[in-house]
Image (cartoon, rainbow, N blue to C red):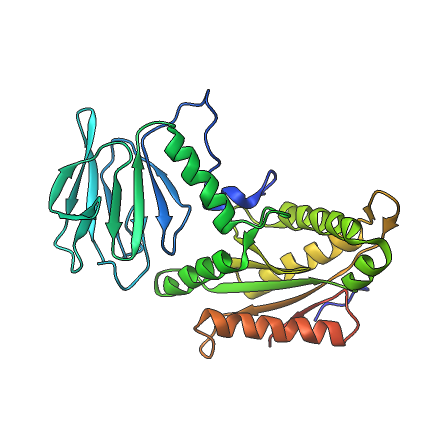
Length: 298
C-alpha cells in the first residue's frame, strides 16, 4: 500500500484503431476489422505476406475459438492483393461465399470465423463510414478512452496470450468524492473534471497501454510485460499527478484525488473477470483506508 503522504499524448484512441483518413492523406490498402474481438483494428498492407489466424505470431491475430491457428493468408501480386484459405476448420468467406483463393477488390468483406474484416484500397466513403461506426462502438465519447465492453475484450485478448507473453496487470482507478462535484457544481463541471483527469492518466500511461472508462468516474488500465512493482509505481505516479493538479472548471478550481487498486495475474487468477475483481477489491480497500492512495493485492 502506498499512502498519500509519501501517450498517448494526443489520445489513446490510436492504440488499436487509427483515425479516419483525411482527404489529403495517402490512404494505403488496408484491412479493417469491423466485427469481432479486434473490432477497430487496422492493418496497412504492403509487400509482406500477412497470415490471419488465432496464433499470436500471425500478422493479424484474432484470438477466438472459431478461428484456426493459421486461417488464411493475404499477399500482393502485381497491383492487386490475393487471399487464400489455409485449410481452416470453418473456411474463409469472401462476401458471404466460401473461398479457396481469390483476388481482393475494394470494399470486399472477409469472414474469418466470427470476425468480419473489410478490405479497402482507398479512402472511400464506405471506409470513412466504417471508421465512424467503429468510433461509436468502441470509444467513450467524453474521455476518448475505450468503453467498458471494448476494454474487456482487449483484456480478454491479453489473457489469451498469457502463455506467450509476460504477466498482465490491471489498474482500476476511481475519483474520490466525485458525486459531490456533480451535486455542488453541476454535471458540466463534473465532465470537465473527468476529461482533465483522463488527460493526466493518458500522459502517465505507457505507450500502447489500453485504457478504458468502466463507467462514471471509474477507469482501468491494462499492462502487459510489466513487473508488479513497476505497475504499482506507475499507479503511484498517476495518483500524484492527479493530486498535484487542481482542475480549473468554468466557475471554480477543484482539488481532485484518485484511489487506485492494482492486481496482477498469478496461479489463482487466470481469467480477466478474476483479475478485475481482485483489482476492484484493492480499490475498495484504498477507499476504506482513507482514499488518495494505491493498494495492491499481496
